Length: 343
Image 1 (spheres, rainbow, N blue to C red):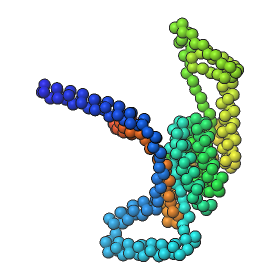
Image 2: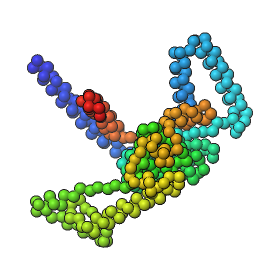
Image 3: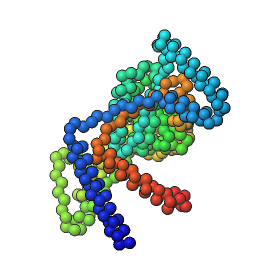
Image 4: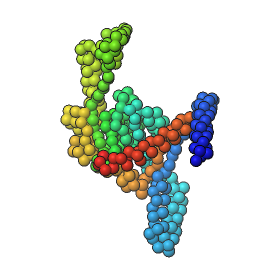
């Protein structure tokens, strides 16, 4: 038993040292040379859907019938290819480009979105459509303002823009969604929250109690309105609130212009609504899921997923792998201890 304990201790030390060495080397090599650029990943979703369909048919349909169907499909594809070669302009399907945006508080995904939009605008035709699968609870104003502007580029190019919300598009997320020609939401997706919020802790009294002085020097009357460490004034608070109100007015104007059918004063209260209620408020145009919408289009359109993937350094990949593993374990543990409570 003593031997096993010593051996386990040795293995633990070995693993610890190995991790330190790997992370150190990753840090060294990731800083050398030029940073690798990302790449654009393009996937024709029609083929993905056909593959799923074929896999299921293989299990359900009689082999002779399936063989005959495959022959007919092959013949049909051959005829289509021949017709396309003869007169490409007439036989080419219209295209539906699919983008994805999962937003954090800083709207970090905007950097990839701008590249995706730039790429598709170089090849898209006026009768093509763009679908954005959006998921975001909002965040900083300038970040989501820029993200919404990237979507406006699609509209300005004369392309039809549809936004699908399966889970949430609130606050800055809805700022993006309202740019679309058509907004589709799942029944229990969360939409709205057209409001502005800001909060800041202040520990001035704690510092004052412990005889800690904070000096803040500014040039400009309103360079700082509220601070975390110093003593805040009523004048500063009023200016801070006024800034929030001004931002809210801009937000309301933006939504009102993008979706003139909504009663902006009714919906711009900071409240959110689930999909079916959002439809009543005219915040969305249709209740459905992104899957249902895309599948309904793939028979007549070329459905093409466009995704820009940024290259990650070795240290980042290692860190993300460890974080994902830890998150998975925590989720499993949390699910076990909460499943009886109905969370």
